[in-house]
Image (cartoon, rainbow, N blue to C red; front, side):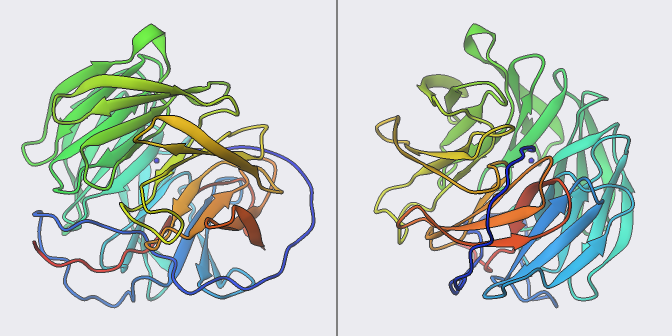
Length: 350
């Protein structure tokens, strides 16, 4: 699990480069298999205002398809095989919708908690973890049966989820209790709770490629990024992000845009700014703007293409060349696009 902003600007037309897929490190929670969904080709956008998911194909100047999601569309996560997309319903919903990417339709809904928002799938695809904001719970879903197998009580207003590469640990931000819950996904229990310093809000979370660090933003109106050592489950540092810190995404260890990892942070509601952080130096190394607002983020496996949703009040997905920080294209999607996810290239066991 992210959303909002409003601006007007012109549509920019260039070509979208060849690979839009998120890297997924090899893990131990089950083989990915083959499946009908061809991975590494599609991006999926959750349009909260229109209750739809837009499908975008690499190289296409427009959305390829629009999938109605009656239960709502706030956040989404794609299975490693690329054959399923799990979509949280958000406000006034209790449901997680399951989209079949071959037929491009909702094939199942899963009853979770009150107002399911953030969602993440383990890198081998056997579990999905959902943050239920209004019930202060986390739902653990068995994706083979598409049913909830654990419901865990966490902090106040759980909002976002990130899962370590081995599929065992889920980090869940608790917005109103200023904390991060550490879930043992394998054993179905809350393992630890990390309280952020100075009553900093815990909005969104992302993990480094090796899973050894978690990065937590403070959300709309905040300029805080907290760094957590996931081995010790302790806060090790923080970074000030003057342009705002709402959603975030981490590049692979090495990418076309940089020889070292980078953390992209969106300014969120009311901004059109993205900040780039060097996680080794823990400083903001540059910022750039996008035309239609900066809300949800996703990065491709090469680390050279960044996708940015416009958020509340707009209906755009912006494609950025991460090597030059320049806008390549803006694609019209549904209304209030909050988040974006890409299908994942298959991985082999280590």
